[in-house]
Image (tube, rainbow, N blue to C red; front, side):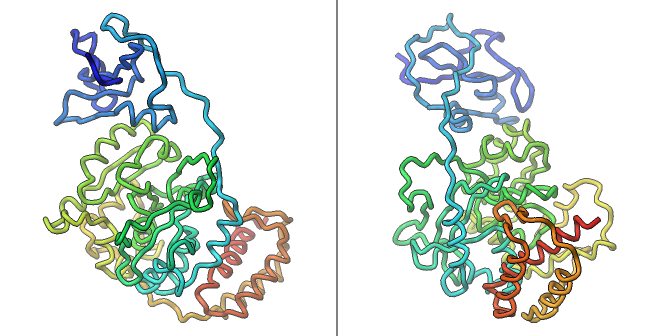
Length: 428
């Protein structure tokens, strides 16, 4: 008696083999629900060309990607004669829950060099200015759940806060704290929201709203933040772990050019996933780490950030726009960092300017005093709406003047400059 609920359809001739979604060869076996005799879906199955294709989309993965219960009760037993090509009915979904904006904002006001270990690591690696830019770009927050803990917020393309991952890092090495236990938790769990309906999105997904650059996808949030410093010509996003790359999260990437950078030992799995997701976007998998890794590094499971941090990010600065050759295709840029070595076309960046905002403040004051201000309210970015523009400008200018050069107040200067750029873009 068969013990498994879902099995690959037994071979009964070529009429039980189908065209593979990846390689298009008629070598594809579909999964069957033994309780109903139904196929799961046309893409759920395994290609028999394991070495040359390797496509394998399991029922469990399909149900997770489509929010379907894995063990819906059935009554009809399976026989080889009652197989029908009917999809499983999709269960009614509960409304997705979101984190209150007040909780999100509170985590940002707590962020500082002395209280957030990951931010301290970023400052030590890149300096205050660059670290501040990354904090603002990815909305890196601070949690009091553990002393020095970081919050990586998952903000979707519509600006809604799905959840936040709480993690603890060593401020000197930048490595996650895993002893005496793995320090990972979730905001919705810490807030004890039992009815919370979680539906995760990509970390950094909010960046897709206004940017059309090619996307680079990595496993960890930390790697996305660090790689973005070295290669800002890409939108760096993270899925959270090796097993979190799925169709549900990647729907938002439809039509884009996407480069996958799996951690060491994840190349084969993500190569198979790239084939499964090829109907959504143009996926390419980088084998950079696989080619460069030593046996010791492979055992450690190093990721792209571990390699990039061996180099000064200023060595990777791109030439001035006027000097750049025309880009024929977005993937051409990948060749510039295939070996993570400074190559022709890169130059050393200028040293960071002294931490004084006097010139910026003067420029902003002159600008806001000489241009007509748009009507309130104004949506500044996916998670911030200005309800009173004059009050917003006055309060932010007062803060940056009183704290000139103090990096923790850099987001206030950044928001003023963001408003300035918005007005410039919309001047008649």
